[in-house]
Every structure is written in structure tokens, then in C-alpha cells.
Length: 233
Image 1 (cartoon, rainbow, N blue to C red):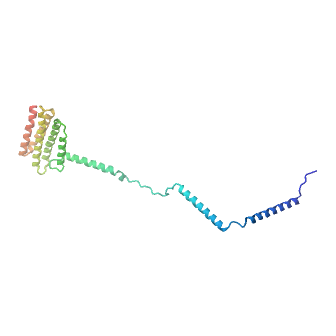
Image 2: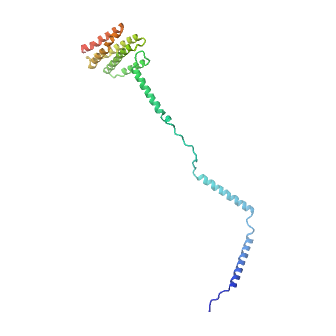
Image 3: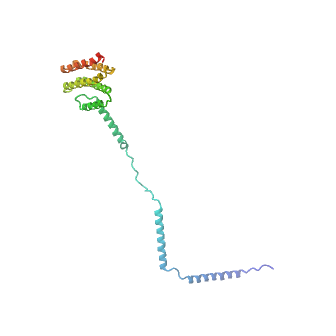
């Protein structure tokens, strides 16, 4: 005996009846739920959703790091002249000071810078720590006066006679101060005798170029320093 199979007609009727029951059930549920949300409810829900969305966007914007400006202006680098200007000013100052020092060292009596030269010389003399060193520095100053006298004879500056007279007087006073310190030690040092010979060699050739008054001063000076080399003190 074989299995019973429903006929095609029966299967079609069953599907139709089942679909009708489902449609009827859905219609009943819809009638129970009513026509849908009221307009007031929909408007309130929409406003609430918009407020929530706006709050979330504000919180996200506050938490995000600030983005740099897309076209921030680049800082301009100073030019080479601006960057090297302090060094150039310092170098110019050094050159000026060096030139001023050279001109002061070679200044002659009557020049604008000569008082500065003598002031620096006096400072050097005052810094000597004992009589021997001061005598050495005074001998150096006397050598300077002899060289200045020779330069004045060839310079032809106005008032040359008075300038030479003053320079010879300064040379003699400085020489006597130096050699008197040597004499207090009891004997002439080799440096003092060498100084006397050098001064004699520098001053003696100037005699024919000097006027009578200054020539007499120069001769007296030579006689004084010659006693230092002759006596051997």
C-alpha cells in the first residue's frame, strides 16, 4: 500500500485559506494599534533627536585637536647684512681703536693726540713696582723724547723752537730721574750704560740742526750722560 499524497487542488486551497487568515490577523493588529503616533509626539521626538545630534557634534568638536592654519605665513629669515651687522660693528671698532693707538704712539709735541700719549706714559710709570723697574721705564721715556726731537727738526711744524726746547727739557729731567735711581743702588747697571751710549748716538747728530739755545741744552745733556759711561758707577 503506497503513501497518500494530497492532490494539487487541495494544496492550492490550503495556501489560499492560510494567506487569508494572515491578512485578517494583520488587519486586526492594525486596528488595535490605532492610526499611528500623534503629530505632537512626532514633533517632540524630532526636536529631541536634533538636540541630541547637536550636542554630540559640539562635544566632538571640543575634543578634536585644533588644526593648523592651511596657509600660515612663513617667518622671513633676516638678511645676511642684518645677521652680520654686530660683528661688522665690533670689527670696525677694533680697527678704529688700533689705528688710534698707533697714531697716539707716534704723536709728536704739538699734535692733538700728544697729551694722550704723555698721559698713558705717566700711567705706565706709576705702575712700576720698584725703583729698578721705574728707572727702566723712565729711560724708555727719555728715548722717546730724543726721537721726538729728531722728528720735530724735520717736521717743520709752527712753533718748532718752543716745542724742541720743551722736549729737550723733558728728556733731561726724565734721564736724571732714571740715573739717580741707579746711583742710589751704588753702581751703574749695564742697562744704564747702554742707555747712555744710545742717547749720545741719537742726540749728537742733532747738534748742527739746532739753534744756539737748544744746542747748548743738548750739549749739557750729552756731558751729563757721558759721566755715566766714563765713571763706571
